[in-house]
Figure 1 (tube, rainbow, N blue to C red):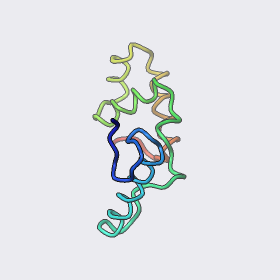
Figure 2 (cartoon, helix red, strand yellow; figure 1 turned 120 degrees about the vertical axis):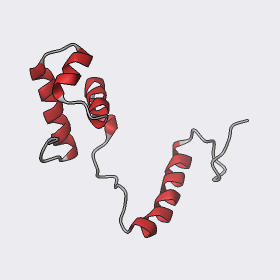
Figure 3 (cartoon, helix red, strand yellow; figure 1 turned 135 degrees about the vertical axis):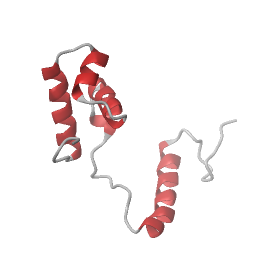
Length: 96
């Protein structure tokens, strides 16, 4: 028997996840004063695997040179990944 998330639809069903997200959003917006995200915001699903890896390490605080070592590729390629991530998410400046 599959679990439900309070909407009577199996937990793995997209409709139920969307409903749960909408309900959570309705509860959180009044508490923080603004929406957390919108459907027009950049998506992680649009990113290739290597850029997702790079993003994960960037969020952990790694710099370009550290990502070069982790991936075993050239600095120019990693720099391209960083620039693409900044562009994707609308970041104007990298870490200082």
